[in-house]
Every structure is written in C-alpha cells, then in structure tokens.
Length: 401
Image 1 (spheres, helix red, strand yellow):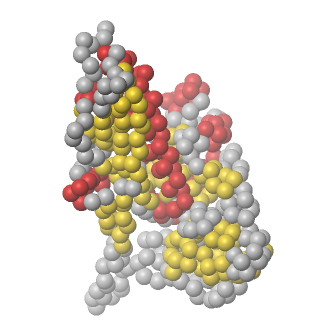
Image 2 (cartoon, rainbow, N blue to C red):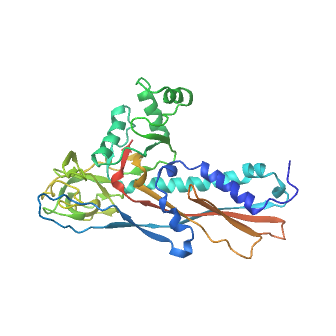
Image 3 (cartoon, rainbow, N blue to C red):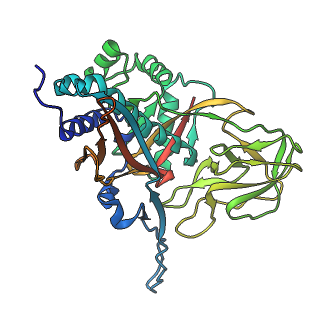
C-alpha cells in the first residue's frame, strides 16, 4: 500500500545504504579499519598516512646491538567521488519504500557499488607476486595451491585469506576439484549452484566479474641488466629492440639469479623475485630504465633479494608474451588492500539532504534532492566518496589466467 506522504530523505538514503552493503564483492574482503579516520572529511583533509609494521633483524651474543626503527608509511587518499543522478515525479515519490527502492534506488546503488569494486580490482597493478600462465585458465588444483604457497613463502598469515576470481576461473576450479575429497557443504554448492564455495584450498572463494584484464607491453630483443649491483626501485636495462619495445604498468619481470627471500628469516625461497613495473615506459634506443616494486634490497630488515643483479643478467617478462591479454585473479590477505570511505557534507538550501553511515561496514552514502516547480520533478543524486590503496603488496598474489 502506498504511503500518503512523500518518501522522506531518511527512508531513501537508508534503503540505498542497505543495498550498497549487499552489493560489495571484492571490497568486503579488504582492510577497512581506517574508515573511522574519515568520519568527517573536513577534520583531517582527504588523506591519511598509514604506518606499516616495522621489521627488525636479530643480533647474536651478549653485547647489545641497537638498531634504528625504520618506519615506512603509505598514504590513503579519498580521491574518488562518484554519483548517480536521477529525477522523480511527486507521484512516484508516493510509492511504498520497497517499491521505490526496487524501481529506482537499487539500480543506481548497484552501479555505485560496482564502481567501488571495479576500482578496487585495479590494485592488481601494485602486486608483484604471481603464479599461473598468462592467457591460460588453470585446470589443475596445483595452480591454486601455488597461490597459497607464494603467500606462505612471504610469511602471510593463513587466516583472512580470500581468492577472488573471474567466472571462467571459478568454473574451471569447480571442475578441477569435483573429484577431490571435500566437505559436504562445498560439494553441495558445487553441484547445485556451480560455485566453488567457501574455505577451499586455504582461501574463502568469491567470483567477481570485475576482475581486471591486463595487456602486456610489446617488446622484442634480448633484454639485459645494464650495470652490476643495482639497488633501489629502478632497473637500468638494455638489449631491447630499438624503438620496438614498451612495458606497461602492471607487467612483471624477473632477473636471472636474483631470488626472493622470506621476509622473516631472509633465506631464499628458491624462486626468482618477481618485480612489477610501476609506470609505463617506452624505449627509443633499445634501453629502458624501469621503475619497479619491490625495491632491490640486499641487506637489513627490509631485504627483498638474496643477491644483486649481475651485469648482462637476463631480464624476463613473465606477465605474458608481447601484447598478450590475461585476467588477473587475486589471492590475498585482508591487510593487502585498504578502502577508505568518507562522509560528505550535507548541503544546505535544498529540498532535503541526508547522509547515512554504517559504522560496522564503514559505508556512507549521501542523498540530496531538489524540487523543480516547472516540471513537478525532484532531481535527486546519490553520492559516495572513497579511496583505494595497495597497503601491503607482499600479502597478495596474482593468479594469471
């Protein structure tokens, strides 16, 4: 039965928030602890600095060996304001709140939620660990287990791990695991719903259509390190085909005989350290200085490799053959990625405005409505403000497919 008064702003905004909470996929598995810092954007600005855990080395013997606490930090910025604007007649605002939500609010908020999630999956570009073959959907349980192996080798806690994959990857995973021993609940999901279920192979699994595709750079030649013992967040290389090579942000490279180390015991994992290209680069002379992450660090608490690159060591692109398109599924611990969501101000001088905030999930949405006397229409907009950050890339691994 329709209400006998126009729907008010609190009804509309609260209904929108409920829908937004239910439509988040990738987003629900990331760190949200910093939302409280953005309860009032104007109080702290639109960014906060987040301190990462300090690492130490252990000394031997009775003599004290005091070491400096090397703090590192990253910045979370609320740089994304998205909205959906719509228009209602006074007649439409007489609808029951459930009818109104189904007809108008749900489509708008589902799209907003999708934008948050889609922006989040772009964070794969900051993740430097990867398994699988780019361009080939995994068909063996071993490939999925190798994601967990990579996380274990980097001392990632085994709780709060999620695997977010494309529909095609999920289908192949269900088919791959159909003959393995499994708990009755996940088996039921596989049979009835075609879903992988939860808590399988060390991860909680989620299908997400927003998982990104990556197009590898175009490159040719025999790429080599140009200069021995390089350190830091860039690598000088040569040997590329002159004028015919470029690398894209998100491409992955390895360096011959430069192996990754466990961040706790700093022993080689037995696998080459993978580096992600952090900005697009093109060559004009067969040489490129590539910006990379992690930094090449041989000693100290933040050591990343067991040896420094040798001159003329081979540089290999492992994100796929030239210009190959591949999907970038993600296996990660919750603390790998961070979403911050701010609370926009409620403007004055309008028909009505309200902001609703869910403390538990850290989600906020603003609704503003005005009246147009010429058309008997109510222009209305729903706004969100948020920012994404790859907080600790070592806690994530890409599953290429």
